[in-house]
Image: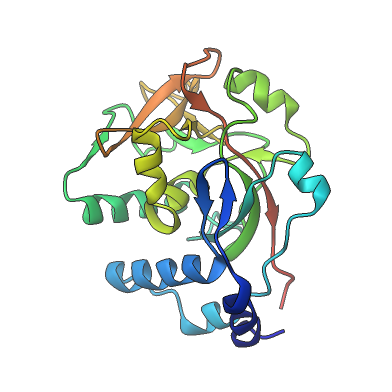
Length: 244
């Protein structure tokens, strides 16, 4: 089914997906957000790429039983040299967009450095991210709410933690979650598929943490072996488009 056909169909019944007072937006609204961001930031996502977006997957009863809350659209930027996206660049680009949109209502830890491979990376063993658009079934943090990142990672099998998806979700497609965080209606997020070395010498024992207070979105770090009150570990299952 072409993107235009499924989008027309989806618009007829594409109501927001409500989950415990939260809203996962319909995919057509997420596409619109990607259009806007790409235009404002001159990312150069081509019209053809938007036209190739397939019919979004749906959640089964089994998915919901596993804690999945909805479907989100993400984008893999760059190239890691093996034909997959550059996962650090994919997060950095979304965070830069937030800096432009929020005009100073952001805070970033000085220990976060996207540009140093010995300070910031995709964790070893994490699934490689596809280039271009991809869907994922998502869970925004409640499933792993009182658990350390290191322990949660041992439970990952067909799921994984959020990496660039955390930045893209909060900064591009679902910025209203920042307000929900400020109101304590959804957990803060530990991005378990990233590693942070706070001193920049491959001493990877932290992960990025996204949180919000008084409508200010913050990017900090937390130790993988420590449980932080109020922080959940969002997870996803990547649904990559079939190869053209």
